Length: 406
Image (cartoon, rainbow, N blue to C red):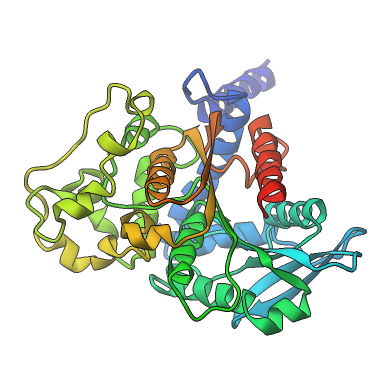
């Protein structure tokens, strides 16, 4: 009897930890709850490790990733896989076997808040294998440096160096890449890097090869407004909570983590901040850039008076290399045709939707692929046992777009 009671208590405790009220539109909510419970347990353990002085929480989380997810480069029946460097940056190369013709090429940047995960993870390994096989392509997945050891602009410089090398004649010749069929892509923070790279290289007149396409998967693109409708609607929706995104931004920008509360209150973008003019605000004015269906009944949150000196302390908040949504219209107009995937239940939804709108306004051809039942990270974790079907649907549609446009 005591054993049964103890078991019931443990099951109840586990159910209490796992259960989380979710919006009704989330597909297969229990699968998302299980995934979130796993993530939260890792984050809590990392917090404990840092509090005890064992290691930084990020180091703990990346060790867990290494133990569980990182795998060796193993060739398969249809795809050769090897580890290499690209512009001095580590990368994993997936090359479809066979065929005498030139191959399509994709350089890919993984997500993880500029501080977590790896191109050598099982999830990204499987994604890139599938891309290479289905597209008869060469996919180069880049392992850029991570925070806290590396902070902006280190990750950006790694991504740019890898992309420049990818477009270089020696790499094109070595991997038999078609210079007319090249793409830069990434998810989440990797989508941020892909967008920034597309902007920089789109404006570089000295290149002999250029990207034909940019494919951005639920990208993070700005840090001035943490009260867009999607941030308000999804602030408590896993797996990317609103405070966690602010934390990742501060980590990436090498800023004091105590500034998180100021960011979440939009004090850094208050109306009394002289560094943010009307032109800058217009680039992320969601009342003008988002369709009314996405704005719903949410109202802008604009602090009248902010935190003096915050933008002087973290100037990269206004740097388009860190926040590509802030780029000038002319710069956007020189980027290649775009695929922008967004998910309804994601704090970053409106970043992607506003960017798609600004790209269109600049004359860029854009495919906006939105998932009403999707959530942040769904595609990257499509192979986990608990994953929702939206992960597989989004992956298939992403690869289909590449096939039709590259």
